[in-house]
Length: 93
Image (cartoon, rainbow, N blue to C red; front, side):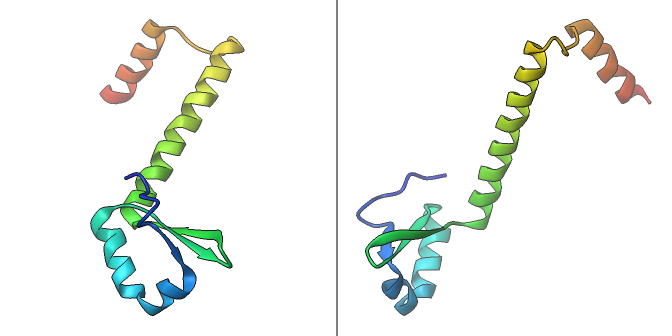
């Protein structure tokens, strides 16, 4: 995901309403999220669907890593050789 440009990517909701199609095209083109404000405070973030899906995928991977680290700390892991055998057995079926 591209980094938000503070001078371009934060807009009031009223401005978005008046130019919705333009802002949506800009989000698609730049791949940067758009922060919409209401009454001077940030309210929502809009982003490209593909960028959103990529973000969710990264979060899922990080969550899986965190679970794996917890399992290893609890002594629930298996050794490399056993893991390799398990993978090869699944592939060869």
